[in-house]
Amino acid sequence: MLVVKIAVPYAEALLELANANSSLKETTNDINIVSQFLANSSDLKKFLGNPLITRDAKKGVLKDVLGEQIGEKTLTFLMLLVDRGRIAYLDGIAYKFLELSYKEESIEIAKVTSSVQLSAQQQKTIAEKLKKITGAKQIKLALKVDPQLIGGFTIEIGSKLIDTSIRGQLKQISTLLGAV
Image (cartoon, rainbow, N blue to C red):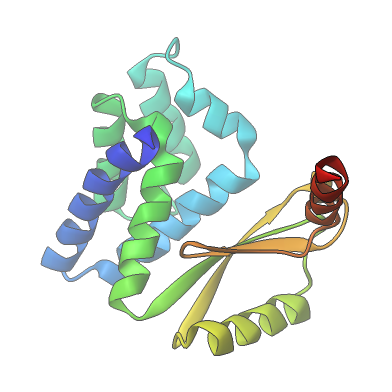
């Protein structure tokens, strides 16, 4: 809950800034890149969240890792987060920003967690089915791999959760057996 309270104002401010500068599309692309980096590098996430590492060191790493791939305004925003001590919440801020940005464009975000990497065809099929279910014009998939699911996948879209994972099914069975 704390992450949401912190993430929303920063995400809204970035969205407002992007709209004011007519750079929503570029900023959204930048934040997608940042989000992908965070999803693929747990070391970067740990580094940014470590309070013992100086702000200058965090800024240097962000400039080195993302500086050439994202726009100047987005990089400045990241530096602001470092200065304000909020860079540890970057993942939540990025997600909330993308959610708000996509909402403006009638795009829904679906968090898909699977036990293995999904193929392009599987991603397309899931997106098409979710379009039908939600009635959204477009679906963006936020993909994550979690081997602990054993098999299957989970989908979070808005406040809905679709759990087809083996882990979820085992939990249901254990709940039923525990209730007997």
